[in-house]
Image (cartoon, rainbow, N blue to C red; front, side):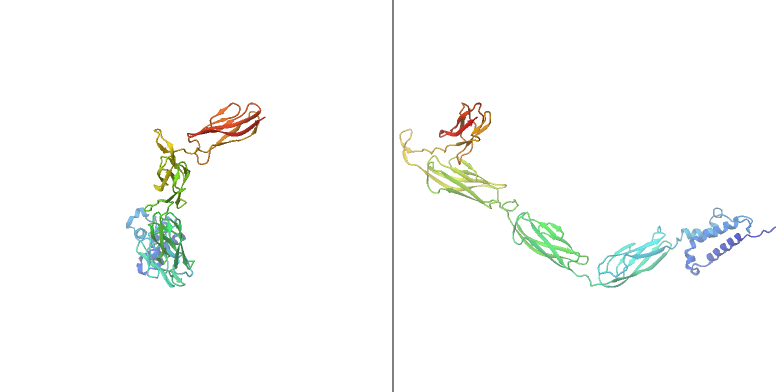
Length: 462
């Protein structure tokens, strides 16, 4: 057999292969830690070395080394590499970090976090905060209640039996331990309020830089968060107002006081008698004669309530409004009543009795003496003219003015005589003149008792 010289490249491959085999032959406990961590790559290195030898032009073998496919699991180099890759994953590189490196105050928030490489490995973590608390999350949120030094450690576990414990650092907590703030609250206005009346509840605390959360309990089942609460009550009663407060380390409840709520006369509320107090008056008092004018007036309390009135004079006539002017046409005794109403209540109040008298001296249809009933005639209406000097064809307005105490259009009849032969039976008459001249305007009027004519004035047309 003819020998061939061995190339430098082949010699290097043989030396590399031999080094790998020597390391693999050592027990795991005798190997360096770096060698143990690199076990998963040793099979690949051996395969590369075998391929290098077989491929060399001047290699020591006459045939290439067996490939992974042809060797199967019976090849010791390939078997060891497969075992390390799939049954014993590599040991991950694990690190921990904290959100701060300087001193902190009690109850300041801290974050501890763990990380590893390769990141796809399923690594579990457990943080020991050094104050007796344990957190098994990869990102751990923590705080310390009291001053002092706290040593933080992180334990971890990974597939393949890998695990470890690392020192994450020491936390220095300085300052006084957290104390409960001094909390006060106030109610405005002070004293009794009516249903629907606005109130303001406010909270303060000391020291003022403390972070305090508030919730007001109004005592009627409603809660309102915040340092200022605007409220009102829908029913009468006595309500105890409380303030619930909390900080990061403390919580408590403070009694603000009682609120007494009374019924309102201007706002409807369950449980309230909302009838206003009604007063009525008759003037003059005592006996009156037939036809003598009287005035009935109504008032109420509280004055801001919106109340409607209708007077019943007792003789079949009604007078709407808070003031009614009336007289009686027959002698007798009449009970005057006041009907009232507002948004949710109504009623009737008796104002009193009116006694009406008249002298004898007249005869009835049978010739017997009877009372003379001659009611006074109503006052005559007047009229007005919008312009007393106009041009031909220029419009002007004639207007009826009713006497005081009479309702417009109730039982009256009118006719304006423009002075030029035209008559208008409306209470407001629009007119114009077709020729120049001086015209006297008159108002003819009538009611159920009497009638008359009233001069309105003179119109000059040019």
